[in-house]
Length: 214
Image (cartoon, rainbow, N blue to C red; front, side):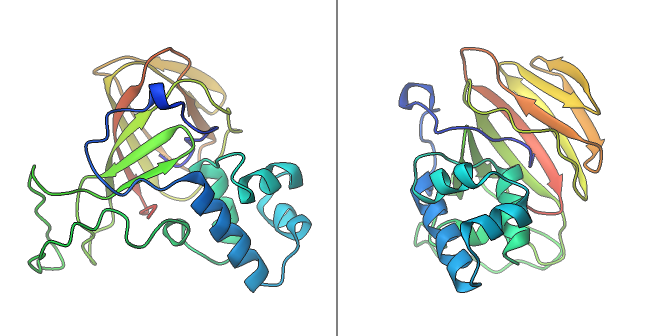
């Protein structure tokens, strides 16, 4: 679900924190500035490479605005980084001993402390451990109301979204679809798409994407 994004989530709109590892927007902005300077890029240079406005990037770096995964993916590509590099490496660490699993298999119990990331209006809860030979990224995503609508965007891979609660506007190739609980969408991510929660309540979605985001 790469194209989800927006401004910081109001506290009253956030879902109850069931897991640990939330990453504040200020940390992402700090990492962007750090990696940009390491590569000797000006704000203007990075904005041009990522096809984003200088003003918006400046606000993100200063922690005034948060950045959605679509835009963050563009920044990561421009800086030769992965999206996960912009989040706290210790996020979601519970200190528990993890039993190594085969590369082709992972098993996640209900009581497992999951890694969770916050980006713009979205809170992403990872639903599986990262297996070296596994390609899918399954996530539980909470989407708060409102925020910044990103431009429709295409990228490599596929994505699937299943609405558990709330409503979601999902635009595919210029056509907007309203998804209700029980509805789902599956597409090649190369088709321009975007999504938005225009209701007054949090929307919860099971999302599976490839390649992995984090």
